[in-house]
Picture 1 (cartoon, rainbow, N blue to C red):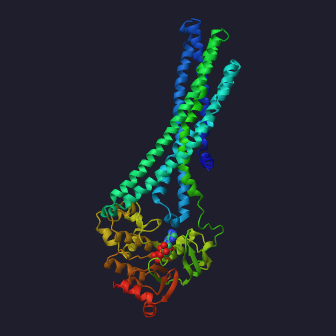
Picture 2: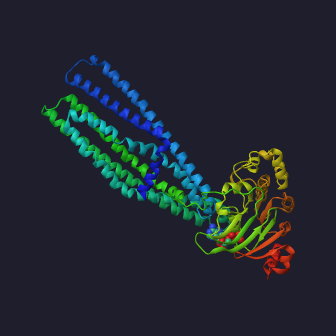
Picture 3: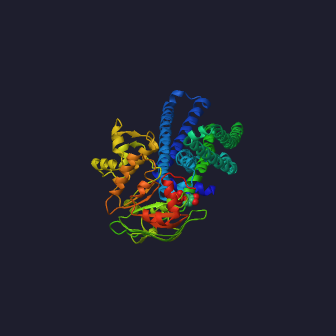
Length: 578
Ligand code: ADP
């Protein structure tokens, strides 16, 4: 599992091919410059200190060292730049992938998810990959380059030192892997804790007024404190392992350099080695182990990356609810909708719709009523294309819903959910959402129909008023009216509304009912009704009960024939049932 996560992370390398290749080339060049720099230094020290040559003779190599030093500083800056650029490019791609997948999974999938966790993996999770791509991956791909170059230089000069390098080098990665095995599991746990923490915070922010009123904020705070504590512990465990691994790597690198130094020292003492060569190799020894040690340091980035990737891969591997491989075009004009013996079962659980038969003619105004839990929203989800029947047929304009391309279907429908969502931006932007071609006059007409124009004009900045996320700063009824305006503006062939007037005052409600009644003849309207006033707009009313059509007909017919409708109707009038 972990190695597959690592493979998944690595598979995105191709997105940043150019910066990563440049990193590799520049890294190697930097390493070669280092070897040359060490050579000049060894030469000068050998001549000036051992052979007492005047320093003045070595100005040229001295300047060369200075030049190399500056060049390497510049290269280091460049390396950092390309490393960051590669990471940013890859993060961008992963974000798009995740966003695209969420879009395709649709709202039904999201209903079953903890949104705090999801947001955490989309924001912090993707951000946590920065170090993986900017530090670990470049370190990994260049780990062997400089040591190999140093081996090529050192072996012909002194094969003893070359041998020590060759034999000690593998110990570092071997230990790193041994330590890393346990560390990955710890890191994954740390991410899971962080995700739970985010979910709790989101609940707390969204439900703050409830928590306060029910005196439960202390209880929730205790829960957050407990998870924070668990998170702290798992973070400390991860850090402990990270420090331990760094310590082990430093220790091995130091011991290895010491072995090389002792071997060189003895041979210098016995006069078996030239000082310049010995000193040159000694200068190179720490550099030989440096990339391996750096790998150890960046191993922490790998663990973190893998921990964060778990939820992303899980999301990306979710099976798509309705992939249409070979879509059939919808016929022109308003589509007839037909459900034949439709059953629907949510992922886990009992059937929610049973053998539903329903035909909705083009231009029909159909109201759906039923007690809560009857399956009204589920039926809407089917009509919206967010779910497919578990068995039976749903046909849109004669075409099986499983063969219709969702985008084409969505072009034809407009939807106002029970709690509509507004987005950051101006009111005008929220109304014309996705319909950039709409003119200002059309927008105003739609707002008037939805009963929104009046209150918008009373705001100091009118349609340019900026609103916060999810419509912060507007009342429930105002949000509903903006969402209605958005739906009316689309002039869709099918308008789906869920309890559209639930949040409206009587005046706005009358405006909305008028708008519903005056929708173009060819547009169909299907709405979940909770008020008697909106029921009057309907040509036909379907009474749903426990996932079945219990009765259907006009208001008068149902009142005379359906006891359930009578009870609901009493409820609508505000009279409590016995
Ligand atoms: P209504 O809109 O009429 O109140 P719903 O369509 O929301 O009814 O729900 C019908 C049944 O389906 C209920 O028993 C509800 O518990 C169940 N249900 C709704 N959404 C889900 C879901 N995402 N997963 C599992 N069961 C669900």
